[in-house]
Amino acid sequence: MALKKWFVAVGVMVIAVAAGVGAYLYAGFYDIGADTPHWPITHQVMESTRTRAVLRQARDIQLPSNLNDAQLIMKGAGQYDAMCVNCHLAPGLENSEIRAGLYPQPPNLSTHQMDPKATFWVTKHGIKMSGMPAWGLTHDDETIWSMVAFINKLPHMNPQQYQEMVAKAAPHDAMPGPDAHGHSPAANSGSGKGHGHNHSHGAHSHGAKKPGAHAHN
Ligand code: HEC
Image (cartoon, rainbow, N blue to C red; front, side, top):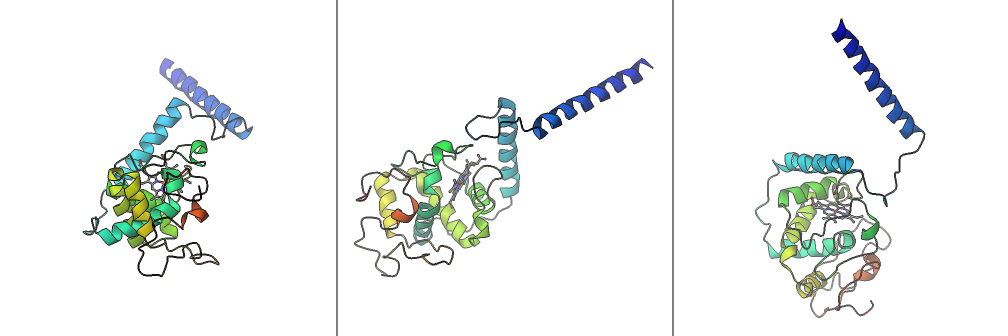
């Protein structure tokens, strides 16, 4: 009998707490702003959910055999500089305008050695409610692997090597559109040489503080 009463009391309490939380959220009191950090418990739950999910879901991905291929890495350099650098930085690029306000803040991939399988999975599928897009919706696997190959080398590059590689890389194959390729006059010249400065930046990274090599910054 005493036990039954105890169960009822716990049940009532659980319902009351759930109703309270529901009312609080429904009334709009939750601070959804990206400029207020999570409670430590929320942060911890989300962080380990992400880590565990990526670990599991990337586990069976087959690494291609050409991840060290210079052509593939070069292709990835162009992609990375066009689509990722503002959020994920590069050697010599320590901050950007968008980064400070992102929560969670994107990791600096130029200092952070990633597991290639995890890089592939996250790049392809993105991460919910974080600002990390699912690039697989607009890019095929081969293109994503080129970024993985490049990101794999990124922590070992210095600013000059980064700039050189990006300058030589073919422009990224953007979505078809009016100015998809317009920003990169070197595109079809075939040589890629003699373009020490970097034309393709204007369109994409105006918020980023680039290191030296840059006439218009
Ligand atoms: C608008 C900003 C933004 C852009 C652009 C962006 N990312 Fe991200 N990315 C994020 C954020 C934010 C996270 C962290 C998500 C989290 O911690 O839950 C992230 C996480 C990642 C991770 C996982 C890192 C880790 O430590 O687990 C990889 C890999 C990654 N991004 C690759 C890329 C690539 C490749 C591109 C370009 C094709 C790209 N991202 C473009 C915001 C961005």
